[in-house]
Every structure is written in C-alpha cells, then in structure tokens.
Image 1 (cartoon, helix red, strand yellow):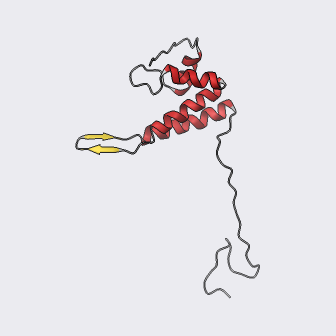
Image 2 (cartoon, one colour):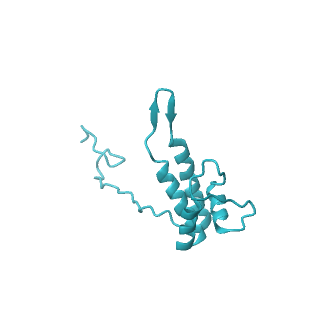
Image 3 (cartoon, rainbow, N blue to C red):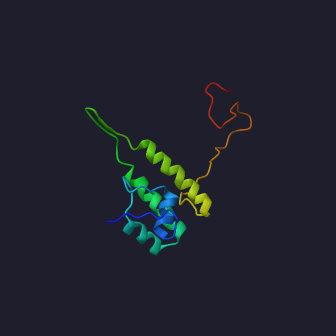
Length: 123
C-alpha cells in the first residue's frame, strides 16, 4: 500500500487528502488505493465525503486503557464529524440522514397544560 501527497494538488489523491487533512505520511488514515477507488467510483466531492466517513468508522472503536497506555478516539472522531458536515455543506451534498419531524400531542382547550403534558390534579 502506498501514500502520496503532492502539495501542488496536481492529482485527485492529493486533492482528496487535502480536503480530509490526511496529508502526513506518518500516521495517515488512508492508502492511495482506497482513495483512488472512491475517486473512480464517484465524483471528487463524493470521494472526499466517503473517505471522511471511512475515517470516522475507524475512529469509532471503543476507548482503551491498560496500565499507563490510554487510547481515546472520541475527540478525533468528533473532529472528523465536523469536517464531514462542513464538506457536505461546501460541496452541496446531502448528509444522508433520515428526516425527522416533531409531533405535537393534542390537548384540550380547557386544560391547564401548556405543552401537551397531563397535569395531575387539574380540573
């Protein structure tokens, strides 16, 4: 597996790495072959989103602590979730989240309830 990054952003792999912040050969998250797969399977913008989602899955492992060693992925995962949201907005791509709605419960006009809850002892 290989790692390349051209600071002049002359190729697709370097552009994706730039957007996801995976530009260091020491401790990189993705190999060139993985990035190339997503670039060839979709648009450049969608490849960025797919790569960020992959990194989030890798950072979603439970925290680990043994004696003096402590590994926490929580902060890194939260950072990539923010990057994911920002890149989706920047590229105009949907988040793929399921739409939600608010349900208001009906209430009687002569009740003392203001938020739909039942108040004990109210006439």
